[in-house]
Image 1 (tube, rainbow, N blue to C red):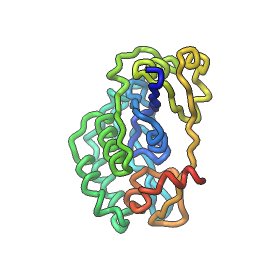
Image 2 (image 1 turned 135 degrees about the vertical axis):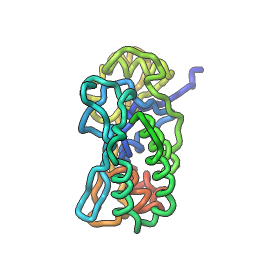
Image 3 (image 1 turned 135 degrees about the horizontal axis):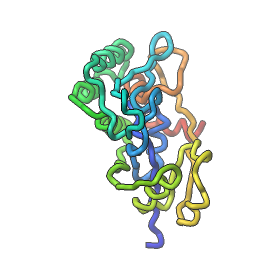
Image 4 (image 1 turned 90 degrees about the vertical axis):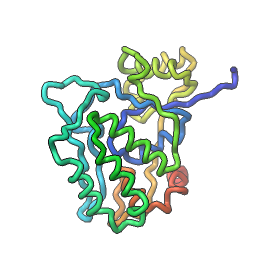
Length: 235
């Protein structure tokens, strides 16, 4: 199979991800969701930003971390003793109910959020799957925890690429800081780095603020979705 080519990305399963997360996915054949690495507090695995009249705010899924300082993403449990569902849904409705995409998408995202998820990764994966479909970017997704690999760092990324028979790995820009590129070269795997230009779309509030959850786009300007990535390619 000399002509066989397969591009993959390896991405942590963030909560309500931003468009940069999906820009990477649109360029690959398969996505490996990296749930076998350590959970980072105050990062994006359990929270993200949404637009408000005054700027932006976090929507956060509370998780149990006490005494679990080195837990893997796949093991993180949601703190369901707190009324986080009501808070997130209230924030979304307050800020997006007048948006042109609210009627189209709010019922499904509400259905996902109100489910009795126990583990954060299960909630995140369901939201990611929903957003992939909303953005017409459905791709095969694999969990790294299903690959039974024990390596870490650059070696783990390489081992995942080998396990999934990738010929090209699409890395985020920060991969330049830690990837051992020579080991990928020796394995015959090309490494490319994402060059992301944030698309501009019509938000409910002005001025335009980049870096919001993809929910902001689908609620605020769903008509822009078919041409979304053209704006990133053209600048």
